[in-house]
Image (cartoon, rainbow, N blue to C red; front, side, top):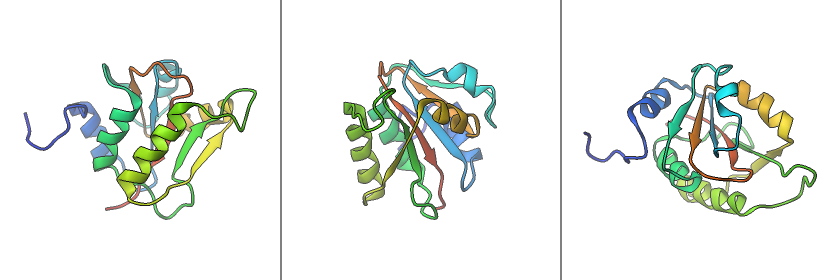
Length: 146
């Protein structure tokens, strides 16, 4: 038990965050994402679950410790709505708000087509799956420096 650490952040997640360096990517996803399959292809090599937690709460906890990359224009990516690239679902605005609050600035989010998102996720350091039912709750965060 540690003081000041959000209980959403389990020991394995904190360990993975500590291992990550500048430019490494973290995928935060809902329960619909093929996380287990893609996680095998990541640097970390296995999935981290934050069961019982939704995307908003997980993003808030992670972004308290995780600086976003300021050397690239769009340090956050999200999956586009299939068949409607300009489509919006509520989680997009929710996570945008969480990111902007954590960074104390507006951070643009780059939309990626579904299969392009999967390919980018395979290049990530780690995948963190929440219990959020989605849909389209799939985000990639690029780590910056402190």
